[in-house]
Amino acid sequence: MKKKVLVSVVLLMLLSIALIAAPYHDAQNYGKVGRLYPSDTGYFFTLKGGKTDMNPKNDYYLIHRTHKNYEAITDLLFRAAEQGWKISVRTEESLDSNGHARVMYIVCDTSN
Image (cartoon, rainbow, N blue to C red):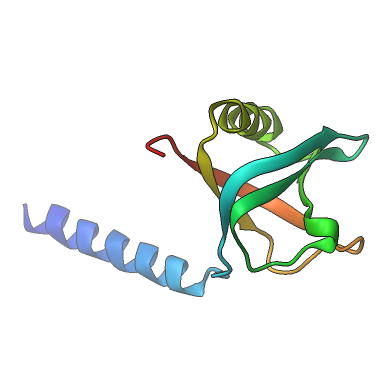
């Protein structure tokens, strides 16, 4: 029993260290989906009625086609646009070379 507790504590400590060491980007980017359009690169979209700390070029966020969760994120984005749901967008730490904010993930609030 003591060994299991000790192993659990050690794992929690290691996880805490990993989370502290991970890069954290605290910019706030949220609102409802404004404009949305596809391109060869991926899907571009804007936010309206919220906050965009990243200030991307022409207000566009990019879900790059090579993103490992591209399909799931774009499906959620379309659904949020259709339903008028508010989304929060986590982006990479800085704008890409074209001035767009590249999306890491999206969280959707269906209660609004």
